[in-house]
Length: 283
Image 1 (spheres, helix red, strand yellow):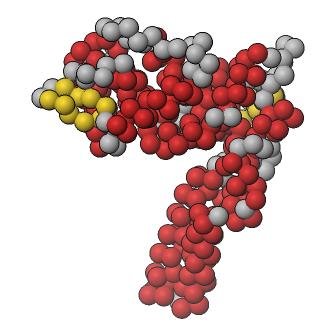
Image 2 (image 1 turned 180 degrees about the vertical axis):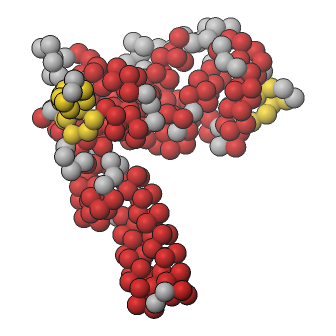
Image 3 (image 1 turned 30 degrees about the horizontal axis):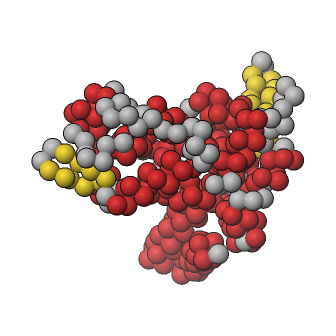
């Protein structure tokens, strides 16, 4: 139960995590994450080649990550060949470390000249809690109230095996109360598919998520996800936007080459799709 209680405690801080994720996009920016945490231990600045050697990251990847961090206002050039965190970057690191070292028991190692063991730990923690949060949100908002590991993997852009490792940590079984329940379904001919559902405890914790409450309280969002058969709000908005573009294009083409009535009908569908997107965003 200890692991699950710890997960619940961490997930209670998920709003801050989401704020930071909106800046960095953790699942697609692991090098940037490693680098900015590393820089948090070097207030005097870092040199890309030295950082690449210590972190065991390709030098080109370090330069690319630094360029992106500079564009986000988290890092700046201190001198030729040297980079430091901006005030915004320092605040980002502080918030991130507070998320995972609230009691002081897991304090990051900050000895000069050493890579913090907390750097890799925080990076892994960030991805872990983000994947758990996203999976719970998607399962809770899905019409079937369950999703396969294949769908979740595709949605989150992570391998099935990696995601499975993460989700099994918070799954019920072997005497522990979990947030999720793992179900193995037979597809016939010896094929099997792994699905995950929320447990009662998982539903209880999910109800605390502001993003989930927003989805459930918005008829526009709920309808959008059903119509577009989407797993997430973002996926639904993207699909609805594409549909509106297709309908509007078809409407213009129909007016020009087919018949005004057909063009009018496509135009109505396009306008409806655009309206649904705006209502969902406004909510």
